[in-house]
Amino acid sequence: MNDAGTARREAIATALAEVEHRIAAACAVAGRSRDEVTLIAVTKTYPASDVRVLAGLGVRHIGENRDQEAADKAHECADLPLTWHFVGQLQTNKARSVAGYADVVHSVDRPRLVEALGREAVRAGRRITCLIQVALDGEPARGGVGPAGAPALADMIAATEGLVLGGVMAVAPLGADPGPAFAELRSVSRAVRAAHPGATAISAGMSQDLDQAIAHGATHVRVGTALLGRRTPFVR
Ligand SMILES: *Cc1c(COP(=O)(O)O)cnc(C)c1O
Image (tube, rainbow, N blue to C red; front, top):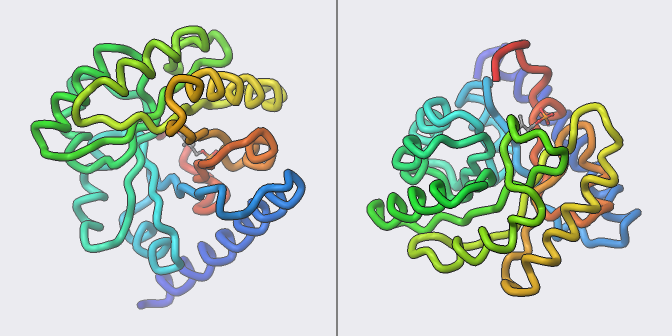
């Protein structure tokens, strides 16, 4: 590896150690075991070479939020033992592409998307784990079904061939204390698990609020900035 590559590797290793430390500390405070929480490294806007560095440091879960970028990176990194998580808003017409590489889709929020993902998963001969994205802020522009709509969507996913119901996901409201939102997500998770006990995943928490998310039962944290640095503004 050249000097720039070595420096990048060291920077990511240092950041990963800090994130791991935060996760471990939050688990300890919550009386939870570290292995109850999965770290997903969100690599959007960063190159496949960073995915390779993360994989070399032991990270096994990668998150992306735009289909074309995700498809390219998953292809470039096909030799690595990685689980790919699609975490962005998803248009129905992208379901075929996403079904080609995603193991988990965190942004399932409407019946038409369930149908499309099921159809494309069957077509590709794959099984896709679906998390129901829950809107906790009444801001539908960011995606998500309202808390009251989650159980019906859960039933639909569970009944769809090619799909596995994994649990729930949310993004905390901007500019507010995330604690109440994460507590509400946990209660939505309970409602879903009443009918689907295996749907245990709670995907919540990002660079800024992963600690609070873990306090409120998150099983998956999605971390970008704290691992890879601040993204260029206006690039989603
Ligand atoms: C970008 C993104 C993340 C990671 O956010 P950071 O603040 O960079 O850690 C997590 N979840 C979703 C849905 C994202 O789009």
